[in-house]
Length: 143
Image 1: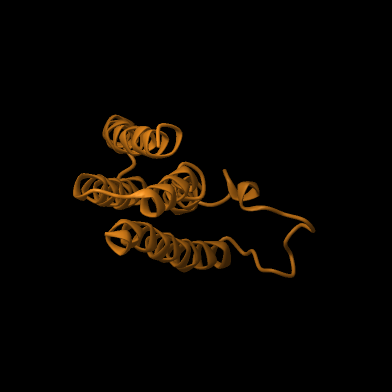
Image 2: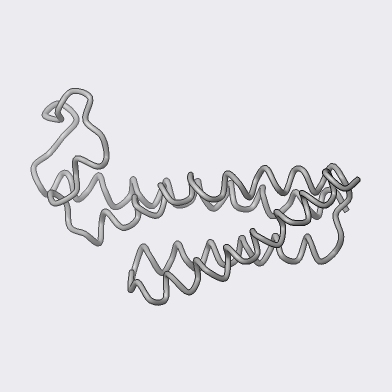
């Protein structure tokens, strides 16, 4: 059952890399179209500096990639704790649910980006994370 619990985390890492490549595939051509290149970039510049410079729809992918580096870090920790201490089939199912919702959230944010749907997806995936967190606490603190 350990591998079944860790598999969703591995899948989310893979999805995060897919999003990184999507950012690059859309951002670099948009920068070229705007007449920007690495030589003309401001020293110490960051992706946030491209806000208002590149089209919003290009920046949405980068926004989502940043989101994948935020809340999912909690997911990774919780999944590892549960995998080490004794996962159940429900734990694995909710971990996969979290990952599926993250993928849908990414696609939605990167393409359509309407806030009400993003918020709903975020709330449901966060509910999965809350459950998994309670399980991790129960498996460790009350062991």
